[in-house]
Image 1 (cartoon, helix red, strand yellow):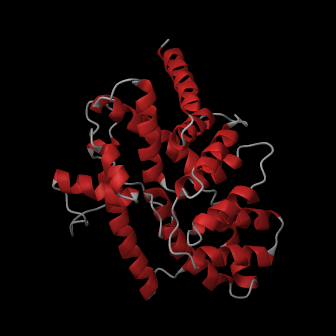
Image 2 (cartoon, rainbow, N blue to C red):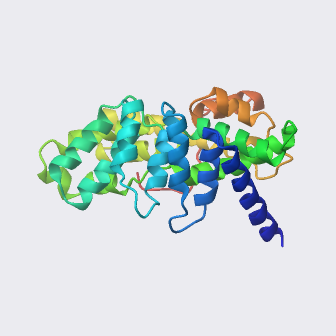
Length: 302
């Protein structure tokens, strides 16, 4: 019964968001409508309307790219082109080209996409701004006619953190496939290109993507080299922050423990990692691992 009630509440919220028709409301409706769906839900049409209303919004442009991938009749290159126009220095826009080139075994296309990632300034999926925008819109339609309470805002933030995380992460299998084994040996310059592109991945705005970039770098450098040791040191700091973040109230699944100001922290910090440091400071936790700290995560291959 609780599941049915939640599903009904979500459908009602989607209807209200579509009726509201603002860019944030349409983006929220699109993300909610596609969440958990295995096939095309029509979400891309909604996010396309949002992008048309706010063509300069980088976060909406990237969400459109991701929702296009779930649409049965969407040409990926159209939202990708728009993303590049509004956010030309973001390497995440090259992931679609990399995937298509990999499918065709197009060596020049793979190298071109890897070069775009390598030369980019950042690799952002806009998790924080999208959570801030969509949680605000969702809380607003749930309490129509009144200002959302702090608890309702926190509830919407918790919900949209999960929805947006499931919506915006890029496909990475093609990168891994292009940067291992025979490709590194047979394609001239591929090893150096992959190393630089892995650094591009690590210039991320989420823990998950940053961790992927660091892991890829470890695969591409000898562990006993100067660069390998530097990457190990970076990864230790990363691992500490990610593990400690998971223990703070911001990661709680209990609404009563979730911080009521999380939405404002996301709104004022472009990266998830920087938002985490706010809660580190609040908890009195050091930002860097103490000398005696050891990871509690299971051992993994770099």
